Length: 284
Image (cartoon, rainbow, N blue to C red; front, side, top):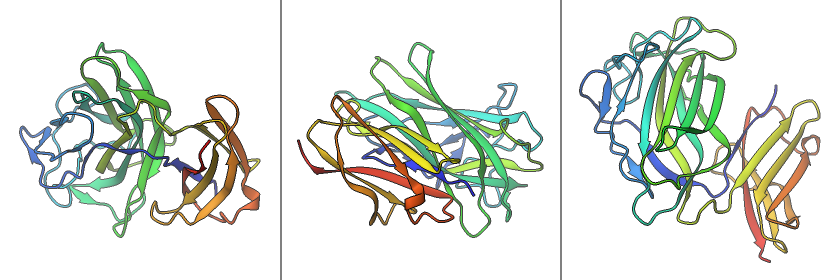
């Protein structure tokens, strides 16, 4: 089974909502989202649109009142919904986006499905002038099974600084439009968290990740300082960080360090997901 890698490297929550207590007003717009914000203004409401960019009613019964679940069947290929999150840097704040995390749910008739369905997501960052500046796809993410739901991480290839004056937009597209087609489900998300670095430009962050399943190797790149030694740790649950790939990686010359790890020498086994974090061991 291929390993799916996600990254954690000092990123903080920029804007997050769990949708608990959200109100639909009107039926296609989620309001009262009680955003947790850090370095940005309150993003406000999230409206759902269908494939034709027309308003799409959001489920508000069964298991769905505390999640974002547009009522469109996305399981027949080339069907999806879209929504947007407004991101305006607060006065005096420097914000850089690194990734988006969320819980993926499959819905049928307003109820969460007790089966693993696949859904696709695309997250796009659009600058205040309307120009797209970054995009990342999540293909065939598995939904919950009624007992638990996997957290999904979408990582931008390079960090996205919100440096232009005005409001950026995080466009979210959810449904069945990439990879293999699925049948008979509605695509929902919950516990949405937009993450990044606040207050210091790009900051200390993993900027590139590459996994070669045939060679079973992993390459990580992060911005670094010559003379500094780093530890590369990994976790399966974002809680226990006791395991490491290497606790003594010397920084490369220049502004970044790239290291390739041979995963055949680790105890990864049949993991389906791992998170990585780089820590400073000794400063240069």
